[in-house]
Image: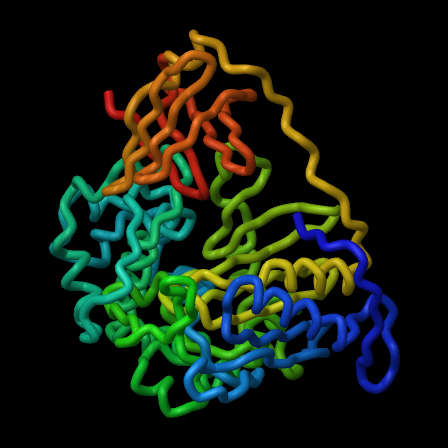
Length: 448
């Protein structure tokens, strides 16, 4: 899962060399290579071992226009790593008896469409709600937009029966955040600040752009016509904040990570309930086509003999990654300032070096040539909101149209199609025909 061969390491912790540590020069080389290869202006990194940050640094630029260098205390907008904070807020309310995780949200929020109101916090936080996925980056800056948007949803905002299948849904986390807001009687941004940022000492973390801009802030960039440019105006949509809009730094984020990996303890005192951490990191949903699971706001996986708890983030202008190996008391945190950039090669290198992992390729899945009967059984149109996958039987294969991308699949395995690194998982229904096609974390339901 995490692999990059050939990194030899040793770095200082409290002045002494630690085995299987990370050489700052090696980190810098890999970071700069990946920044250049992905046209990402800059990134910040923090490495946690035990109960402390043992390494932090910034690489590259906060803005291609000003040339100001990245520093570890600089703010980035996170993307979906925000979800672990939204999940923490809802779960903490549940621990206090203010929210019942398996109760319909209509118990707490009035005026919802009945189909939406029947959803539970458990379904929202585990991505099993059946809500379609979308992620509009631009919208209202008014925080009341969160509730206004949700109250406009109708039953057709669901693409699948609740509880039927895991399918990543940003709107599910909007509703989870609005649940926390409604139960707490204060704006979502204040709920997160009071329940998490302040107890954890995350002094510069915020959801509000007008607060973030008062501290050193990395500008969000995108690649246009092969060139990296600042996104203007900056993307913001208050109606989607709970799914991916926290501003934070790797140093602030390290405080959450340390508490998470140390049973809620930070700086010698309890800041998070141990039961909260257990709830977040327990498997609540199975990922189709894999042995991995989703907790609440966290992906759960085992690779190279290590149990990983992690989540990535991608939004307009930014990307992020938090990887934790709680059993090893190790974590790497990365933020970057280009759309979707989370620096996976750098994260792989640091993980392998710090944990002394042997790099080995993933085993090739067993496949066979597609036959006509299979091709005909898989053919159909599958939808998730506005996104669509069309599979058409063809001689010796399946032609796929995934939104605007065309692929031809000629090999299949046990309920999946494979083309290079693209894997379409086929989830059968009661008639043994695919009820869903699963791709990149999202399910698409067959039109019957």
